[in-house]
Length: 371
Ligand SMILES: *[C@@H]1O[C@H](CO)[C@@H](O)[C@H](O)[C@H]1NC(C)=O
Ligand SMILES: *[C@@H]1O[C@H](CO)[C@@H](O)[C@H](O)[C@H]1NC(C)=O
Ligand SMILES: *[C@@H]1O[C@H](CO)[C@@H](O)[C@H](O)[C@H]1NC(C)=O
Ligand SMILES: *[C@@H]1O[C@H](CO)[C@@H](O)[C@H](O)[C@H]1NC(C)=O
Ligand SMILES: *[C@@H]1O[C@H](CO)[C@@H](O)[C@H](O)[C@H]1NC(C)=O
Ligand SMILES: *[C@@H]1O[C@H](CO)[C@@H](O)[C@H](O)[C@H]1NC(C)=O
Image 1 (cartoon, helix red, strand yellow):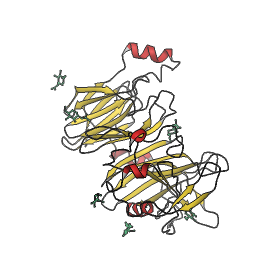
Image 2 (cartoon, rainbow, N blue to C red):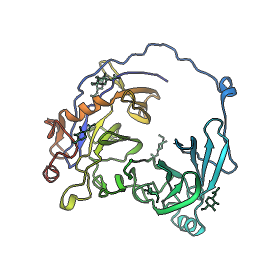
Image 3 (cartoon, rainbow, N blue to C red):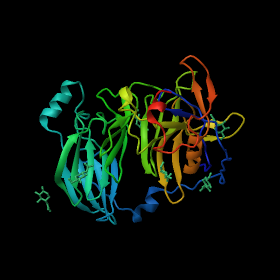
Image 4 (cartoon, protein in one colour):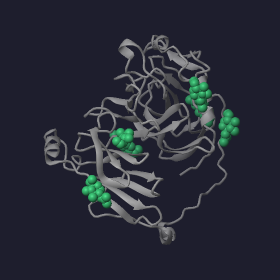
């Protein structure tokens, strides 16, 4: 594994609304790799400091969150939710969350396997004194709102459609804002052909990315999401539309304004502030070596930095890297020039940013939507 730390920047930005833009890098710093070798520590050596939690029948642990009130860890596994002691991972509460037989039977009848027709927890979010959690529920996603101090106490059960994937294979991400809006980036349908960044719950109108429009999202694998300032950010990888020779995956940062209320008329359920940029994690050189596929991120709010783990494209030499992105640089990138494509056959040309000093809630949404 190659570890690199560098201020990586973007080369590409796509605005929604059919204006597809590419951003030139604003600044680029060399990446430094100070050490030739990196220490590797064997599991056995750290074992004395490890605590392990296991439960009979619980597999596919996939979600982990923190309850700051009780200082507990909450874990989501297939068909189970667990509350664990933060210090030693001792069990506080285990809650079974299975699909009912009728739902399973319907799932089998659609040709899905016994493994797939289970409840895989994919959303696990703490909001105040409640836990909002969703599971695939045998390809019939559902969400529940539970009391954090007693997870068997369910306040509310709603559809998980557009909040949680149908398939346990689909990668998704979601967050809850302090005002109660849920932002989810997931496949919205059973076959997984309709990916979206979707806002629901709360007081603001539900909004989504344009449907079946590859310039917005092109077979994305969503990785993470963050609520930062006036925006929600989404990190993912997707097939690159701007790459004309063969299929390539690029990584993206996308952003919407939290106060977006949608466009007018036919665009009333669509974001007007959606933008995305390419994350350039590469080793510089005459021919840069790209780590194109984002796998995981970590946000450090104190320094406004986003760390990402990237791998090379599957059909290239296997390698991985860590890149760090400065959020203020991301903001600058979104204020810079775009690239624009007249139609699907023409070249990408530089295009002035239609709104260079972009601020949420200041633009004429109808006008922008007509661009
Ligand atoms: C969960 O239920 C509580 C109490 O009814 C409510 O205040 C909260 O907004 C709900 N959360 C979500 C995400 O629906
Ligand atoms: C948790 O909630 C369930 C369902 O409301 C209830 O039956 C149970 O007694 C509660 N447990 C505790 C420890 O309060
Ligand atoms: C989801 O992400 C994992 C890890 O990167 C990957 O192996 C898997 O293929 C992805 N799922 C889909 C449906 O692409
Ligand atoms: C990505 O960054 C490298 C420097 O590490 C630069 O040489 C390259 O041109 C950038 N790629 C794009 C597509 O902007
Ligand atoms: C992030 O970028 C801003 C402006 O470009 C700069 O002032 C700041 O020092 C950078 N932060 C880090 C941690 O590099
Ligand atoms: C959020 O947006 C408002 C209105 O557009 C602006 O006044 C404020 O400075 C923005 N806050 C941040 C942190 O950018």
